[in-house]
Image (cartoon, rainbow, N blue to C red):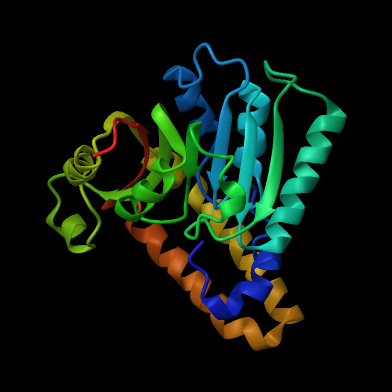
Length: 256
């Protein structure tokens, strides 16, 4: 979410009003279904790196009967994620797979703790709203079997726009080059610019409300929280006109 380090203790409260923390879950689930990522698999194994509050992990488990491990650095987010999973299991499964389940662990996705070693050779790794693609791809792919998939999102510069290129964001051709250098294949890319334009005003309003409330409870974090809110507002102004938030689904090839 781009919060300064000093704002971490107030982060959960500031974001409490947002339906999701990052990527649009319906768009992700639709992409996974339409590309048949889990075709023929009874109980796909998935890792959600930087899972946040767990909305995406729980959605994939329910929609596809997947066994999902969510990893995040923030205990408050993981507490919320575990609550979502408990509620899902109590209410019952709406998706295809009654065998799906989520587990959540505290951890830094960049460190690849030894305890994740059993979560290798997976069918899918997701790393959404965490790192730019060129940094996220080498991390995500190490959890995935040959022929498996990893899913990352990034803000890509609008093709043909000099102003967009000035932001430093990559264009799709640059992302393809990174994927080729890893020996992998871009299976699908989908712009979420329309979704961002439609949802951003309400998200900013909800975030402003949450930041104000968190600042009242923790006044020594007001400056950091205000900086986070400004960063999101600045991002909103260029999202769509210059930058396109984009889902990138990649099939892992052989080792380079």
